[in-house]
Length: 231
Image 1 (cartoon, rainbow, N blue to C red):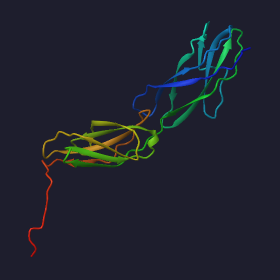
Image 2 (cartoon, rainbow, N blue to C red):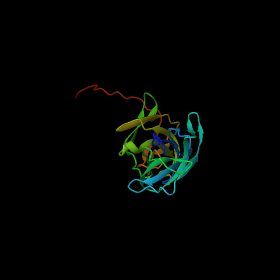
Image 3 (cartoon, rainbow, N blue to C red):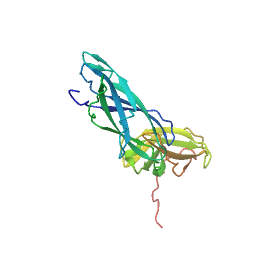
Image 4 (cartoon, rainbow, N blue to C red):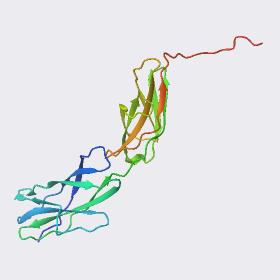
C-alpha cells in the first residue's frame, strides 16, 4: 500500500483555440512525486462538475520510473474539447498506482472552467476628435467585464461594412468605463465608420457594436466668440 495519498495536483493552462465558439483546450497537469519503491504509474481522471469519475477509464496514464527524488515524470498534457456556446466546469483528480496494480486515494481535486458562452458587445461606443492631440478618442462601456480579455476597434470606408479593418487592440485592465486614443491618417472629406468587438479569454467574440460615423472635414481650430457691441 502507498505511504501517502498523491498530493498537490495542479493544472497549468495553455489555450489553443481559434476565434470561434468552441475549440480544444490544452491543459498541463503537474503533481508531487510519490517515493514508494514499487511505484509504476500515475492516472488522471476527469469529470464534468456534478458528474462522477470513471475510475475504470483514466483520461491519461503516465508510466514512471523510481529515481532519487521519487517516481518521475510528474507532468502530463491533456486536451479537452469544450462544447459550443456554454461554460463548462471540468474537475480532475489523479491516483498513484504500484506494480501490483494497487491505487492510492484521490489527489486533491483541481477545477477548470472552459468558458465558451456567448459574450455581449460593448455599449455606448463614442468617438470625439481631440484637436490638441490630433487623435480620435473613443470611450465605451462593457457588461460582464470579468469575462472580457480584450476589445478590437475596426474601421471601414463603407457604412455597414461588411468588411472592417482592425485599428487597435485594447487589453482589459479594468473599468467600468474604457477609452483609447488613435491616430488616424485621413484626407479631408473622408468618412470612416467604426465598430468594436469584445473578445473573451477563449476568443469567443461578440457581435459588432453600433457603428460610429466620423467625417473629417479638414483642419479644425478652436473658435473664440465675444460680444462686440450691444444694441
